[in-house]
Image (cartoon, rainbow, N blue to C red; front, side, top):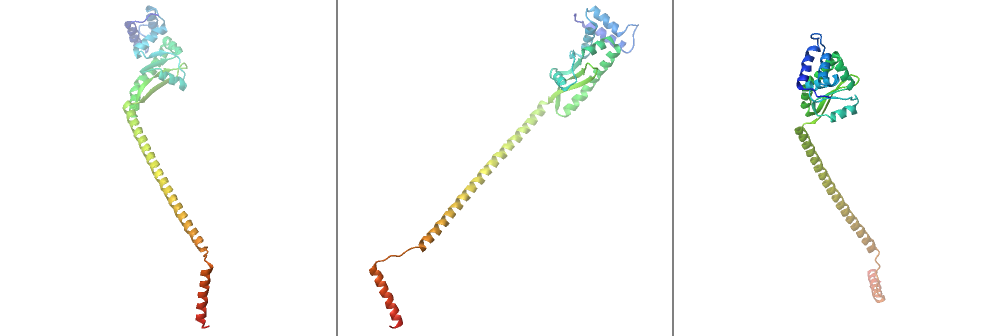
Length: 241
């Protein structure tokens, strides 16, 4: 396949603007594509693809992309910038051979580009920026706009700083709680130790009192006889015997 020159592409582009709405001198847009392709030794589809790339940029690609989320995620991760135009192969063939189809889908593509400033403004207001976005024309003819982005660096830095401060505050509260718990535990230990000492002292005093009440006095027979004699004298003296 030969690569179309800039002048060839411009010729198709300029002619397309005229002939997609109405025919000029009996020559259709498709005929012009055919002539340009033959001159460059390339197919009508390839010629039309080069025309689309000149009009919308190098982000134009021809591939079939499903409408499921996984397929859209892959195309979002596999592209960069905002000028992505993904067209299914069968849709490209229709566009290259049918001026009404070409006008219809090019209108859809232009709608996407016209919507970009609004998308960017809305995401920017939420603190996000676009990393990749585009339009996908699926094999069944449906159209999907996709946007892949992330937080702005300054917004991310602010959020991360806030999260770090919150984590530090949580760690500080946790350490304080642990300190208070340790202090409370030490206080309980001292109180229990003091209560145990008081209980032990009380039990000791009680035991000593019991032991004292059970004391048995002992003496010699001589001392006992003297004590008995003194007792008898006291009794007899008191009674006048």
